Amino acid sequence: MATSRVSRWTSAVTSPNTAQHPASAGQRGRNQIGLAFIAPFGLLFMLVYIVPIVYAGYLSLFQQKLIGGNTFTGLANYTKLVHDAQFWDGVGRVFSFTLVQVPVMLIFAVALALALDSRRLHGTRFMRVSIFLPYAVPAVVSTLMWGFMLGVKYGLLGSLNNALGTDLNPFTPTTTLISIGVMVTWAFTGFNMLIFYAVLKSVPRELYEAAALDGANEFQVVLRIKLPALRQSLVIAIIFSIIGTFQIFNEPQILPSMVANSGITTHYTPNLYAYNLAFTGSQQGYAAALALVMAAITIAVAYAVQIRGLRNAFDH
Image (cartoon, rainbow, N blue to C red; front, top):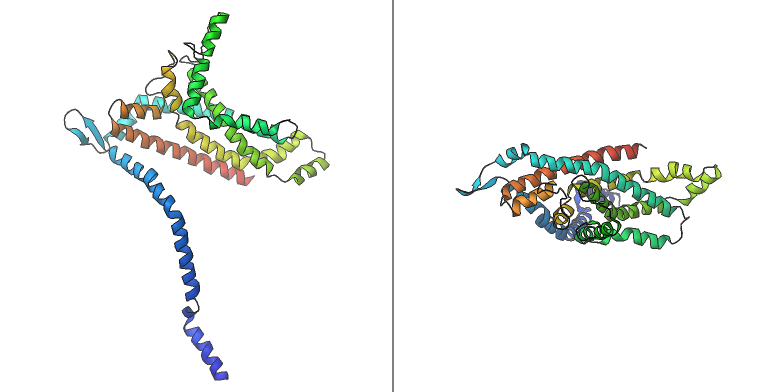
């Protein structure tokens, strides 16, 4: 009896993998199921993201010339882009727009979320839907709507100017960027507000009750509980807002056909410049290089904000 037990123990020690085969087979099966689930996403990711980037990188190495046609030029497009004043003018305009529009939009979104979460407003469901509704309006439709309202040629503001004898024009070369900022803020404030409101709803109500027992007023509750709860979501909202503002295209593309003397040029924003280079100037290689450089700038800025913002959020 003892000998048989010893032999069984000895065989178990000398052959440890025999007991692990069923578990390892089950693990392989689970891995295969997981790969099957992510395979459609991986395929679509390759087709709509990786392949276009690789193709854009390939195009950026060529130039369309009158003599010789499409010619391989290496990094000449990137060298030309470094010295392109029109490109850097558009980049500077986008940076200026981002530094003003993103904080204003997020301040409005936080204020609206705090107001809805205060439980002192009537019709909060209607307000949530109505504030969020502009986000559901397509960007092209939104631009057309604002162009018809604020345009002085045949818009609502033009009719008011004729009736009142005024000369208001929100689309002059010095005010067009501000008007675009109003349009973008109107469209995206509700989306960010909904994110912040969802975060505030997840804060345990016991914290508010404890703060009230300690004698905290409404302002102190906002300052000490609600705003700290929004730190991480605020960082994410800033990152997505920066990426969105760097991609401004619809507004400067559509508005020149609706308003006169707006100051919008073919290089008003980098995206608009790339579009005009590719489809009007037949410079697909240069447009591809511009798009890749702008993508690298956007990623670098968003990454810097993410690292700094999340570090500060978690430190607090």
